[in-house]
Amino acid sequence: MIDSSLYRTRVERLRRPLSTLFVAALTAALMFTQPINFGHGIYEGMELTGFILIFLAVLGRMWCILYIGGRKNRELCRIGPYSMCRNPLYFFSFVGLMGVCIAAESVIPALVAGAAFLGFYHWVIKREETRLAAIFEADFVKYCEEVPRFWPRWPEKLGAHTVEVDGRAFTRALREVFWFLFAIILVEGLEIAKAQANWPHWTSPF
Image (cartoon, rainbow, N blue to C red; front, side):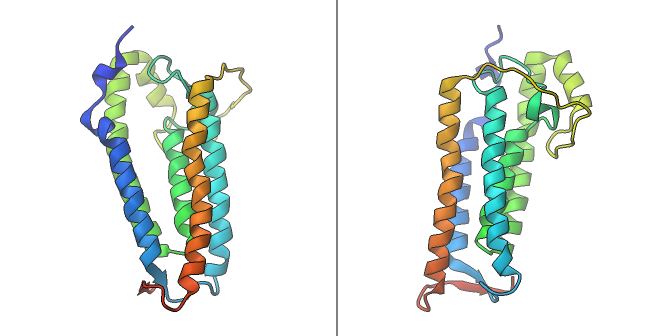
């Protein structure tokens, strides 16, 4: 069996630390920016919409882990969420990111964060594809021809599958999605803080 760790690029190794820095910068932006009409009009519905997206992200990531957990780089998964797009974990992370920004009623940080995420992970995905092509060869090439890279499309037959769940991978996934759920508490705390007249922030048009 090929040692897939040999194919990990510097970009992939830096993905987690760079993502951590990105989340820290986003949190600071949400803390110290506020649209003019914060808490009024359309912004009143943004919070609920954002929370719905966060829950969809949590459910989606858990769904993905049921199929890929403990088997990444050992098996080419093409069923379940991986029949909809080749990178559903990243897609649901993007949904969660947008959910947090929208729930915080911050349009400009949402646009900037979304563009930064798509730009960086496009780079990450391209390098992962190079590694996966080296591991799975023709099977991966065929998979790329049949399934979109990032934006999901509903397959002709999603089907029901029986999968063996890796307990350690599933537990690790629970810890990861906890941070999306924690974001709901963070957003609520920020809303209360921003309601205070003395909370320092930069007022943006949107």
